[in-house]
Amino acid sequence: MELILIRHALPERRHVSDGAADPELTPEGHAQAEHMAKYLSTERIDAVYTSPMRRAAQTAEPLGRLLGLEPIVVDDVAEWDRNSNEYVPIEQLKAEGDPRFYEILGNQWDGADPIEEFQARVEAAIDDLVARHAGDTIAVVCHGGVINLYLAIVLGLTGDDRTGFFYPNYTSIHRVAASRSGVRSIITVNETSHLRNTGLPMGLFQKG
Image (cartoon, rainbow, N blue to C red):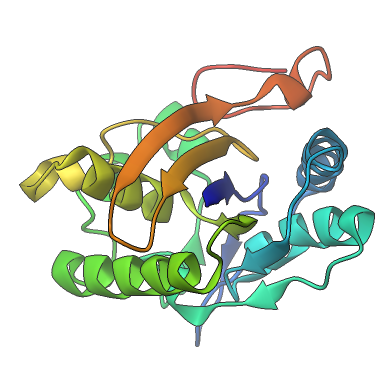
């Protein structure tokens, strides 16, 4: 089967006093999600899954609409900082010289799940989807940390190499060939051609 991992689009910066920040998408983020959905709508995709976090669910919505599929929420592909009361796009932290930029790269942000727990839940959730979709193509809209970690697992990386070893752009597409026997092969990483010449932000290093 083919597993398509998609990073969410650009979210708002948000801080709350109580509870999780869980921001929504910016107007630019909604536009990114529409471009991604149109790009993938020509492919045969059998199911669309999403993290429960707003930025992922809102990114999945136009893809599900164009494919005629209702996105299915999978709680365990939520980001490692899902319980944090603050969300700041990493590009803003880097531009401001904020020390939290380096904390994020080291998976040390307040509210972050411990790395071993994060890996266990992400790996189990995605392996369950693979087992349920033999011969299918599925899309999972999730987060940069989830994508980093899962591709690190496929590559056999361990320790600190499991997080932050590459940067997934907003609405970037990452394809993995996966079998129920456990064999995994990376097909593509960071597909972003749907954002080219749009003028929309792509992430840390590029603009559309």
